[in-house]
Image 1: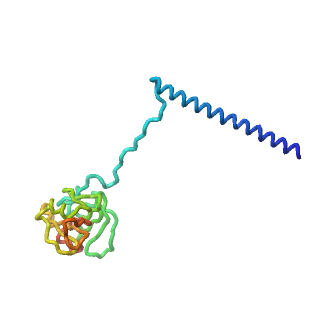
Image 2: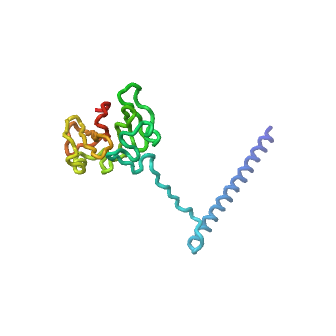
Image 3: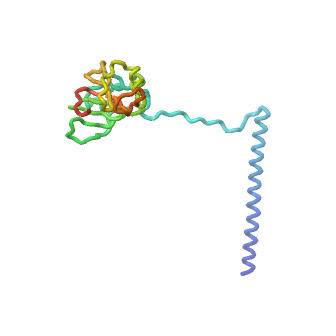
Length: 204
């Protein structure tokens, strides 16, 4: 048994020597390749250095230049039927229960929510990433809104919201602008923007 154990120890030692020799040889080969590459790059030859890889900038779905105007957002116009809005790809899932005065849906393509009254689009509510076609968006101040829309802004009702007329809308409509203060001050921030039909009784 002692001779067998000694033979095993000797075999392990021999294997260790061979493994060490292989590692050394590999390191020498890597060093030689690196030296050759350095010499080529400094003697006017072809460089073997790794090229710089750049990652293309991507845009999140719906973030493209979608803007809300008096008529709607892109091909989606205020007053269109639910069927057409779905065909255009703007309608997501139902967000409220059946039997409500208005049918609420999650939106797509730069829209937060949509409301339909009697099967026709009554309200377009936009998220932070979508802006009005004038550049005003969630996070803008009341002063910035006033600079753009002037006398189109209605009286402040003191309920943390104001309304802006939408004279070019296909139906009688206005913008609902939610503020972070009950009364509009110059530095009040906009926290909500929606284009809504004035006949949309489901949204106050």
